Image 1 (cartoon, rainbow over the protein chains, first blue to last red):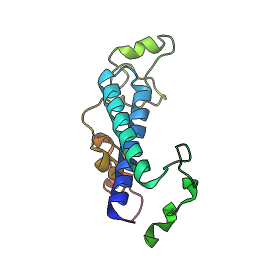
Image 2: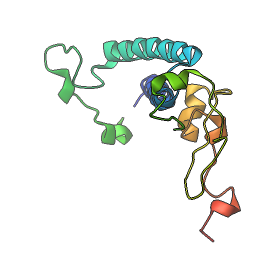
Image 3: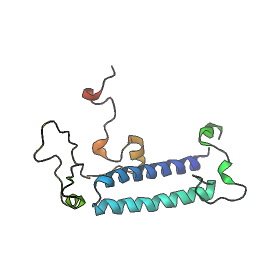
Image 4: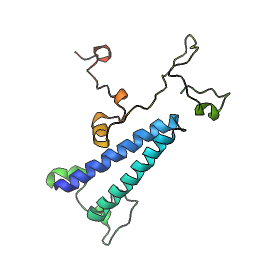
Amino acid sequence: MEMTREKMLMEIMAVDFTLIDLNLYLDTHPYEQKTITHYNNCIQKAKILHENYEQMYGPLTPMSYSKCPWQWIESPWPWEKEAF
Amino acid sequence: MYMNRAYGISAMQYPLPVCPVNPKLAHAYVPYQYLKCLYPPMAGLKAGTIFPELDRPYGTDPEYTVDE
């Protein structure tokens, strides 16, 4: 798998993980405006990263637009990483 | 979470003590977390948490390590 693609995936995983952790924190701190603002900024960043990736390499989940032919079945699958 | 049902969610708007002021015997409590600083996304992913105060890798504290 080419370096930029892997790097983009890593960045997506990192920002998505930050969102999950902030989500858990905010569940018990629902009135922290500062943290909610930070969460919203991260959502914005994640959206851009997801969109950029999907434009270049196709869908990250089956819940996004597809060109024809159906892109979801395109290689590589996550377990085929070594082949690229 | 240290939140009394009798006070409802509005009680959460006020600063909560890290630990209960009058702890009861035989009750278990979880200290209330206050945000200090956060790891950047990549460091958080690698550490498994974005909160430095929760970053305690297994094996570094002998008290919580059972492996020899």
